[in-house]
Picture 1 (cartoon, rainbow, N blue to C red):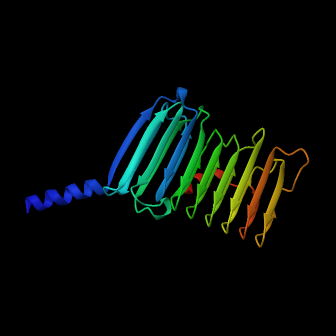
Picture 2: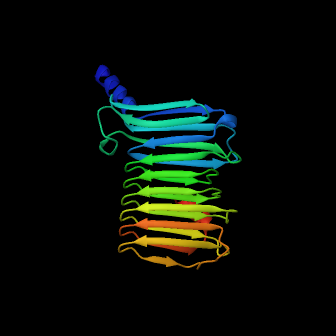
Picture 3: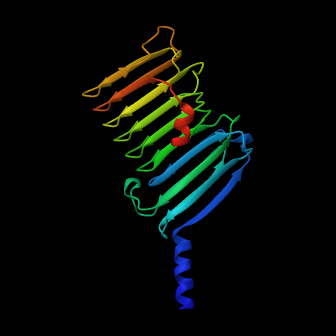
Length: 234
């Protein structure tokens, strides 16, 4: 019985384990993140002084690998599976990246069905996902480029940036963008059947240009309400 118990414990530890590594943020310019199934969370806050990358391996067999490296100012954190297409992967994990708030770092994020959550990102955001939801909130200072299939996208700016472009391409997923009421925007929305709802209107002296292309997805642009609650609930 004792041997059987130890074997079961060993299997549990193999299937579910945690790893974490710290990086000096001074020379890092961008982070590449890839996780086919599970969760991706990136936060920028004053409580951390280094970049911390951690992973919880929820379902990881011998064919699942977490590759973490740093070279030429780029951190690469990628979950991969041997002999499997990205969208067919069975590896499940929760990938988290913590960044010092004052550090401007570009993010390149890819997901199959992983839910993506980015909070207070200071650099440019480039994301691609198939079915996982995307939530981007807080102090967002740079451009956003995103491609999705059926994913729902929610973007909330805490304040208006000095200048930013939001470029989104979706198949059927709906997008909601919340902005402060005083933001000056320009909107270009092209869709076969999707509708546009713009609560802010448009201004010739715009600071934010929203460019959306979709087959059937709707685009809603709304005035920000209680962003703090939205972050806490996400």
